[in-house]
Length: 110
Image 1 (cartoon, rainbow, N blue to C red):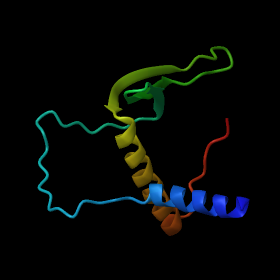
Image 2 (cartoon, rainbow, N blue to C red):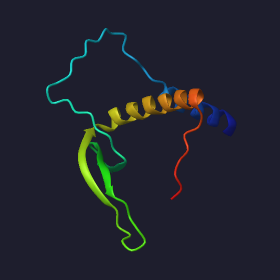
Image 3 (cartoon, rainbow, N blue to C red):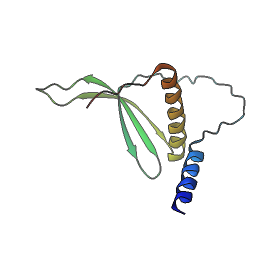
């Protein structure tokens, strides 16, 4: 009985991760306020109502003499938990495709 429950839970979780795309035509225009940024530091804040990604650039790395890194905050993105979950699914799918084509992405050691 427990195996059936685990199988059902696994199928339910798999179905939740499926990405649903609307079958609509899109016309995309850049807003006059459009920006493109690079970030190498991201902080995450979560509340019951939204998720906030705060992006920054590491300006001055930590050293043995000064163990504090200097980060210049450059912007933030706020979204609903529902939208964040969809973005997570898309990023997960895209990173898998990337790694399938290019190879595993190495992560730095702490």
